[in-house]
Length: 144
Image (cartoon, helix red, strand yellow):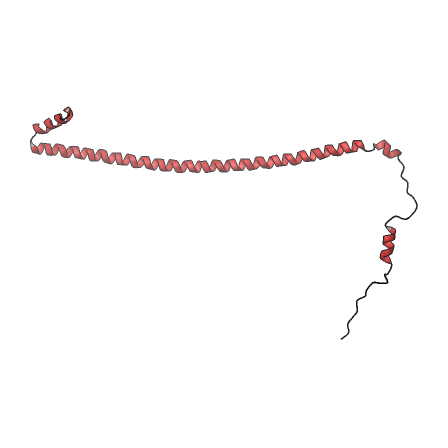
């Protein structure tokens, strides 16, 4: 069984003589060709747009990655600087605490320093350096 639409088309063809049917079909074919060409252009343009969009997207993504990496490096440098400052402050505080445990300025001014008479322990070593050694080997000069 043929569909009602197909029957209508057949009736149109039967109503016209053969030459008119051929002309009608040619015009239909040309219209289809022009629609097909427009569709091809649309598809081509869509693919070009899609490709350019993909390239732009990747470019923007790379720019954002570089920006993020630069920001991360800057923040890491700032963190390292702050850590160094913290270590300096902690060392300063520790030094201050150690000084509190040591003698105060009044205690130091009241303290007396005494020196005992006698030789220091470095003196005998100095004396040994200055004395010639008997068993020291001398270089012999060779005459030719």
